[in-house]
Image 1 (tube, rainbow, N blue to C red):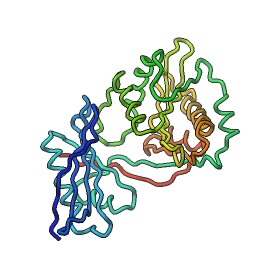
Image 2: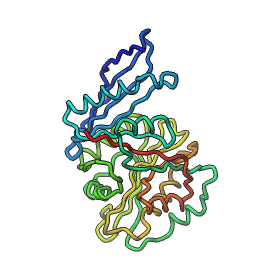
Image 3: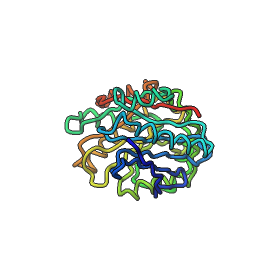
Image 4: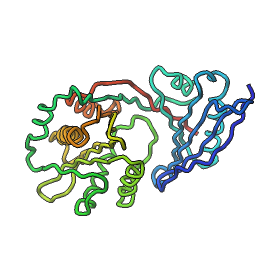
Length: 293
């Protein structure tokens, strides 16, 4: 089947990344697939591109994906990238498609969900109320308060040693501008960013945090973003403490939410244990694949 691959103009662009897009159409002009290539433009990640490729089920095995992939890989090479990553759910057609085209499995992620209708709220409340010597919890919506901004930016380095398997993800460099841009991007979508943080009583500095993004209509499932604890403050149960408080706050603040979603690398057993203890149940497994250019 002759295909027409058309490069599109994608309006989604930020200081952190830009996207290239392609549409595949059949001889009659009907769209049969698409590809988006995110090019990271921040220092520490300029070597990396992320691919999202989709083909209509009825059009698979007709070279639609192969031609879209060729266009995306050529663009990544032309832009000087050395790695392209893409995710596929375990057992899906995308998994075999990527593996057959030179991508290697670099990270396994387990996705999990907490059903708020059956969550053990009394146990979560007891967890959230339990004292943690030397620490207190605080929280905010949207932008970080000015008096916590400096230490919150510093606390983001807790993500630097997050298990990433063999993915060549680079280094995410956080500063005040990036923190505020990330919160603004969530707000621009009409969603709400909730952050719960652990603060050291000794100096008032943020030493750990967990983030939750609630959909604009406050229904369905909210999505956990980052959760991290600075190395010097690990081993005190702060992640479980913060997450319990965040769950309770989300349930109270957004009563129409159905559940909370999270994903954890399989080589991060500590966070898997935290999620299991709080009542999250696995829903599916996905793999990050990487193509070295």
